[in-house]
Length: 437
Image (cartoon, rainbow, N blue to C red; front, side, top):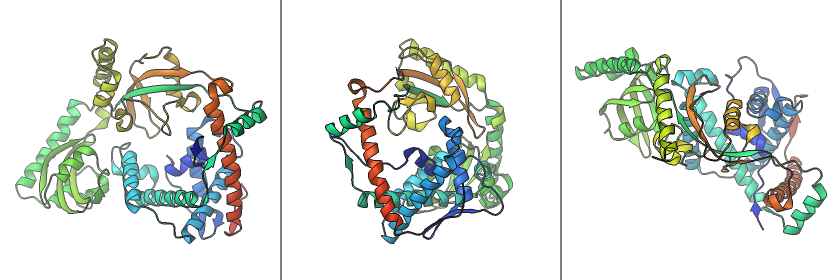
């Protein structure tokens, strides 16, 4: 007998783990609903709607999507209100660690802090606080649900009864694939690296001659987010800074200034101001690489060489992913792409360009030619993809798909029990819907 803790409206909840690609809208913001002391703004609903329409093909043509999102947000706010009344505690260190990891993931997609602030329409300190608040609220919701909503189990007989009752209406199992990847960000041209190195070397010479770190940062740093503050980055926790920068800063003593440190963004000179437990206070001067001068041929040549070495048997895809891929999550797993901890990816949910690549791979172990992938934020990267397995779409059967049928039965039972639980909570929390969407 399998046990699961029901994850409410899993697809819609994805939007709570991130932010929209669009900048926050200016001007007055309407209120969609009031739940206890919690307010749901029109912009909150619109942001989640945009996120889902971008990520899921089925959502694009759903006229009820915004209503479903608002209903889901009201449910979450009801649980959050009750969790606060119940004084549910969360692990603040876990909140900080997750917030740092999520911020770092966001930051890695932008060439500068200013570019990131412009994209999200928020200064970096508010963006970090937004991330922390989202994670803390979700942890409170999860803890309260675990405390008051019991685990759901289904027996073999219940699963069989569910199948017999619903087999004419069950969705087909979608086509799924298991895919591995090696991602390379565009190689910066040597000319761009030399120009940045010349700039940071000149700054280093002025520091050696007694120049003020803060004044030189204001005059020369290419990081707009910290330049006017004399390069001050404030306190950061482990994992919030790019690895090379973080290691170099951590090796310093308070007041000490580093040599020239290279990161994917450019060359830095770092000063450690102080440490407080697992936090450190730093300032830096950045000479940024000119990303308009990347060396695409060099990036493609590297990936082609990697592909040839794998196909010739000199090495393996797993080894090359671990050594070369710029995506740390999949690199740590030998390049394997996972979603929700699963290796099977639904083809219909993949980005169109990845669907095209996967369609061209017919046999297990086949590796694509290097592909250029354009991201929504404007940045691009190059990648190799390897097909590990493919499972065609098919009608669910007991012999082939009992685990999936059992999961559907548990989801049904969980949903029914969850709905009943939420209805009982609604009697204790005031809900006022202001929007007619």
